[in-house]
Length: 380
Image (cartoon, rainbow, N blue to C red; front, side, top):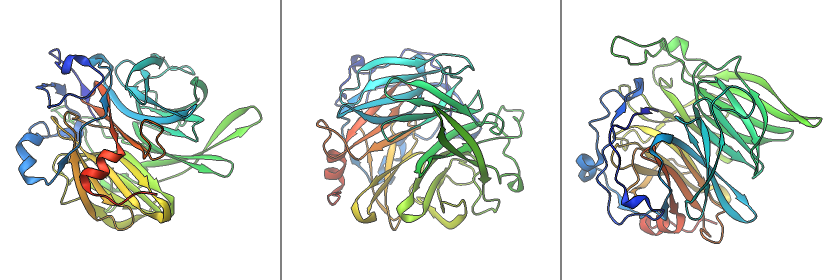
């Protein structure tokens, strides 16, 4: 959750679409947001001896465009092949990539507030290989597109949202439920840091919307809001969230470093479940969350710990939420959003994990490589 401002050209393995064999020397200078206080000093290179981990080489790193400020990816299957879209915050676009190679294919959107235009797109989610939902922070709304041509269908929530960032979408009988995080603040202090509201005012951190087809079009309606206001369960800095219907669970990243960054467990009805995840594992900042859901309710949560130089990806048991291991890529760092597609395709037959990389690209990891490195049982 940052606005990146590059002051030097980044060197990255000749900007190829294949992962370099070693982590490149990269210096990123950015303007901190309120949730990043004192975080710039946290480098994985300084903490790697304290974090048990394995190294997993990226299957690819996409074409690099420093001006994009890439935030979050999401994938879908198109004619049996993986495709990926990622939000570009600074250029107000969605970038479309070949999901097997990382080749940049085209862009969608452009600056504006009309249907089909975007203003600082952030969170993104695909569903049913038919639709994509995008959070626009500075248009204070969510926009729905049809895949694969990205025909704009609907914008909603601008009457409610103040500073939205992330979302989770699930299928409902008549359409979809969309839960959006709203990181509203009380302005900035003298140092330019966001002022977090008092606990009692955090009860609307997440808003629900029901989206369904009506005639030939789509409509959305507000369906309430939630947010714990206790010291233990409140989300001070809100962005990433992801749900697990099989276990009645919603994991939400608490990104406030001062409070103690971690994942908090909520139930799907919006109640804090009284348990935090990864408090002993996170050293930098909790960010993107994904789920590898296996048959019988098993599997693993994967969540990013956002060091500036290289991201640590923590895995937690889907049922027990116990930590089962961590990995880093050869190069992938400063990760915001992540996405996991367990179906995969011919290139990734057991699934593929996508992660934003240094705000300039998207990385892909073959699930077979992750599973082998961490000695995970087969996911059916």
